[in-house]
Amino acid sequence: MTIPAIAPLAPTADAIAQATQALARGQLLGLPTETVYGLAANAENPQAVRQIYDRKGRPAGHPLIVHIASAGQVAHFCPAVPAYAQTLMDAFWPGPLTLILPRRAGVADAVAGGQPTIGLRCPSHPVAQQVLQACLALPAPIHGLAAPSANRFGKVSPTRAEHVRTEFGDDLLILDGGACDVGIESTIVDCTREAPVVLRPGHIGASAMEDAINAPVIDPFAGHGDDSALQGPRPAAPGTLAAHYAPNAKVRLMDAKSIQAGLDILGPQARNMAVYARARLHSPSPHLILRTMPAQAAQAAHELFDVLRQLDGLGVKLIWVESPPADDAAWSGVRDRLQRAAASV
Ligand code: TXA
Ligand code: MG
Image (cartoon, protein in one colour):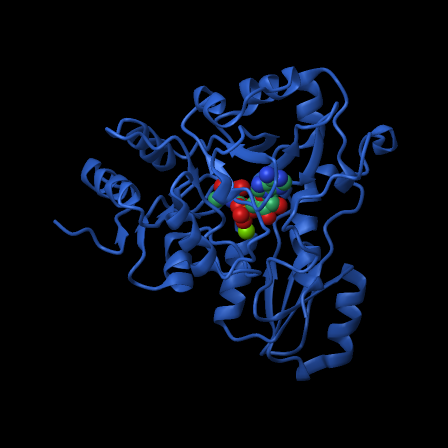
């Protein structure tokens, strides 16, 4: 039996088995997770991992996140885990949280981009969970799946199976798990220091993590916590670039007043452009595409990448986006992705 390039929503046991066999043969798989779709391969098969870099056009120094079925797989990749990281796993896994941990020497070198560490995440999406469990049950178990977001380098992450197809074409096997709930990539936390440091903001915020570990979490994106006490160089996520997550259209972040002023000046001439704003704005131009951004951060995150892709599909050249509310930590994931989209040239 062959399975279509996109297996049906809620994949059957057969589809899961075939996807798992493909991974065991060293092939790639479009995998739904609760954040975004991943381009998955056996993390311990260097040739398979090489294909991820090739197909994405991703630079070699950018490490990949490894997805595991449960916290039980951590010891395979990491010799030791700080107590606070264990507490974060207990509190937030399975879920949209990636922990950077010390890596066992010689294990999964191909995903590490030269780092002595590894990023581990246990996704909650039922399809991802089924695939990971089936991988572990293989005669030669696969302990983890390397899976960056399934988009070409620098582009918007995919939140639907069709997006992955658009990025990589018909020959990639893709499991369709529906639209991703969270919609932006996982929160990444560096757990190699005395205190956890947020490297990429996401759905799980610093205060929720502080409540779990009962100790400070440093989050430079929300101006949260004092990072001056940290020993050593300021942590950075290799491969997180200022310009990233960009649609083809140019993105400009502006406050609602400036957008309205711009629309007033353009008047009926506004065309080939879109506005994506929480505020109710108006334009006399019949050609302007006006989309309302949800007032809730989680809802805005859920649809953000899909909206950017839809606007690209409509051929707009310019998108004016209302800046997310300043000083509101709930918006830091969306703010970060929009700032990076707007930084692209
Ligand atoms: O939600 C997600 O995390 C999605 C889904 C598919 O799980 N994956 C994802 O992967 O966003 P990717 O490759 O697009 O982003 C991975 C980022 C890298 O750019 C890097 O910043 C960071 O994770 N990263 C991975 N391993 C790391 C390490 N050992 N040290 C520091 N940063 C690391
Ligand atoms: Mg990515």
